[in-house]
Image (tube, rainbow, N blue to C red; front, side, top):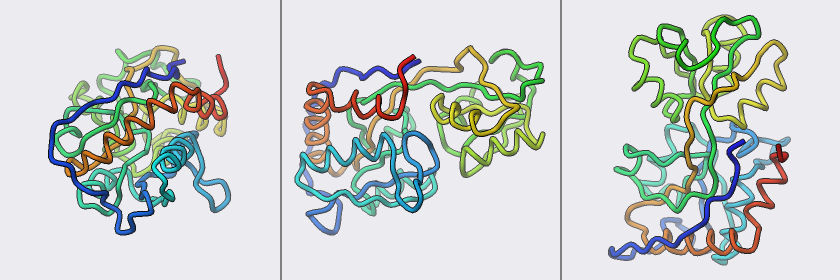
Length: 244
């Protein structure tokens, strides 16, 4: 399972420093999509998860109160760009397209895109997806990879990963491509589904920060370095993801 902590290096960015985006200097506003267990999800009426605890640990080091704003995944980058949020933390992979819009912190963990199918499916791996109907969460890397690499596939986009999984159960799509840890949760909750053993791709998660807020980016990188060195990052991940 791809869940080791990436050694954190401070990235020095030689740009003009701007102040934090949040309206209240004492708050760190986090944009997320709380439908992505175990990284961010609702437990009763509270948003919890790996990303939430990492963001809380960073906020504590910065002397700020973490405020979480739940929104559609495809709205997170825009919220960071416009200053509605200081950071985007949502199991977000660093991609070239996203780097055009925002800066990213150093990676804090790795993940993989996997394929969920029904147990009676004849799909056995990525090579079988070429002409299939594939469910993805809109604007995620699953969406990006499938769209770019499978031009003959029928890509069905959903606002939440769980909606793509429900479409699979209902026979509306042949497979779902999604991050490995949420996939485990969805398969556990829905008998009759399985995850194929071959990963679709491997990727890194990082925190999105406005290009205008380099000071905050550097502070987050320093906090991540410290949280990695003292074992806090790995401890948070271990709390939600069992070792395999």
